[in-house]
Figure (cartoon, rainbow, N blue to C red):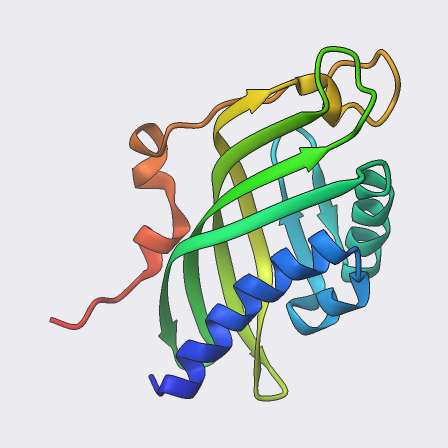
Length: 171
């Protein structure tokens, strides 16, 4: 893998965070494939880039600010496909929410990568929350419809992580 490819994978991960925090959904075109599967758990699964962009625009429109910080990115590229694993820390701010104005969480992104016309893109993303704090009411997009935030332990799911199953470390 060249340094250029490594830089490209980090750019995908970081551009995703910037797209959300600036609500510039057209940046997703540089991150995901047209047929992306975005699995954020508990029934929050979207197929297709346009659907994903539209849903995320609606979800995030209620926030006065968000901050997504990505770290600990690992990747394994094999020809025209690959896998990446990234930790994320996210904060969502919605002033005036009864019980507090912010919610934050930490979790991971388990991504399948493919090359499309010579460029790396995320084709299938699984995101799970490993910790959360603050006011869960901030997550509500429909008033008085509570949002359940399931917590996933990496220890418990380690054997199911696609990144760990698919990677081919040099021997």
